[in-house]
Length: 365
Ligand code: XIL
Image (cartoon, rainbow, N blue to C red; front, side):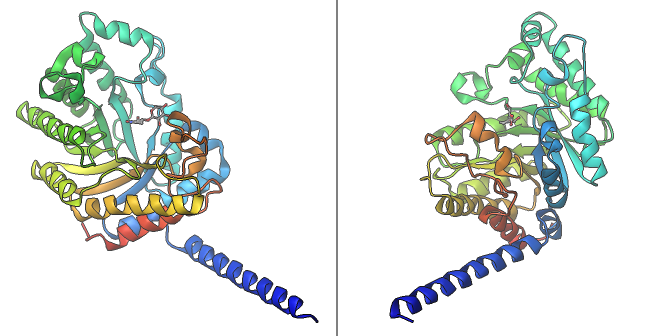
């Protein structure tokens, strides 16, 4: 036996040992309690968005059933999907998500009754005509009424703020807003309440987490909108913070903490409704990327979960296998985005660990 052989054998057994260690670490993470259980221990509901087509993936169904206590349909309840042609309403796709949730003992988020995106061309035209506000309110009544008794939290109005549009109060100059202004927004909540008195009704928006002048303006505007709704005695119970995070964005704990406190002080509960991490500012290396993504999310989650008003956390998908960002906002290098708790092979990632830890450290609700 030559010296070279010994070294080589030593190297191989060291490599074997570290592979075994990695396997053991993976086995631990596989055997650990799922996110839904971790979240439940601190009184939080954890779940994920899924699309009807993804439910055809048997392995993915298992992963969703294991990790989630609540589910949100990605597009299936949006107006463009439920009423592609005027008067031809279909809830078939949304129902497939609803029955999967029910069969697996999960709750359901309704998303979203009033939004300016995902509208059929007929809807855009009709909203611009006289009677647009009534049409909008009727749509809210229909979709919320259809699922009445089955929805834990409804995103009644989505993304009504865009200070850059220059309207008073930072309102978004959308087709919905032009149809009826603040009065129509309030009417959507009244209609939802009448259609399903048991559902918790939310206003939901994005771009509220970071320390930038744009996001500060968005925070002020959304609080102003909430105050307007409360003045109008609109039945609003919760505020949905989408939490589409972006690694590398300036996050300030104190600012975010204060903002969550301001929402809670208005008597609203808070849900993180669309958590994911855009990693397009990070270099390609997957391990380093996973660590940076997890680290970024954990900093936000630690502050969020410290606020007792935060009672629900929903990620916008569960696995990178179906991460919308890879399609809708691709990385410059074309690599798939790694912004969800499970990887392409449905293995738990560092982000999964960070979320599990954040739940473990959170005070009990
Ligand atoms: C996204 C879906 O994930 C995509 O599949 C669809 O093409 C567009 O909408 N804010 C929201 C969500 O409130 O409804 C959006 O979902 C993502 C941004």
